Length: 131
Image (cartoon, rainbow, N blue to C red; front, side, top):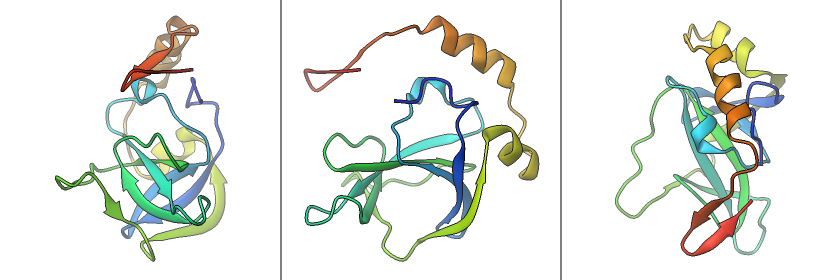
């Protein structure tokens, strides 16, 4: 799990024709600065590496995490199908460059302080302890 999202290199993608960042790793949602939105991608049951849906949080068949510049309207059933709606652009970048290119103002120095204070806290979801 990524604890400091400012240091990670991401794949630059378009999701539903909008700019986004992708990583195969999980991101601690509490480390995402205001102005960005974090979603998990689920892989299909037959091929966990094949992107199937975008959701708020995925426990089983997690195949990636997306950071977007705008919130997604996740319906009541909890997911949006992504087949054919994600385009990998062949470029990698860090969070700072992404925010500069898309004119998103976030305070990265405050974010770094917040992630340092989190230490190795575990998260509990559905009775399961996540590290």
